[in-house]
Image 1 (cartoon, rainbow, N blue to C red):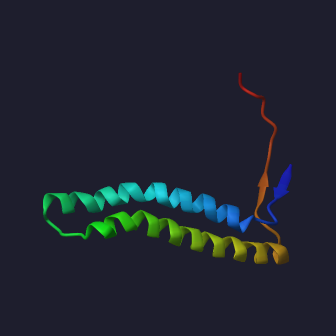
Image 2 (tube, rainbow, N blue to C red):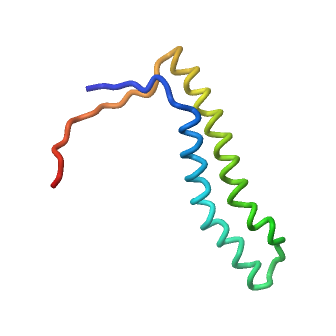
Length: 91
């Protein structure tokens, strides 16, 4: 059975995206933190703390705009289509 996504909740998509960006920023933070701890490079502490927050905020805004644009396009030409199939529940 084919289904079509014709509307995306922009705010919900942006919130989930922001949370994912926040969590995914920690491995990047570690990559920046290692040279700072070894003394090879100096990074202000507030930038290291601010990085995950800025990453999440920018991800939120980008996803909010992207979902809004998707809704505009999907209203005119249709949304993503995908096929679904029923599966048995595992016990």
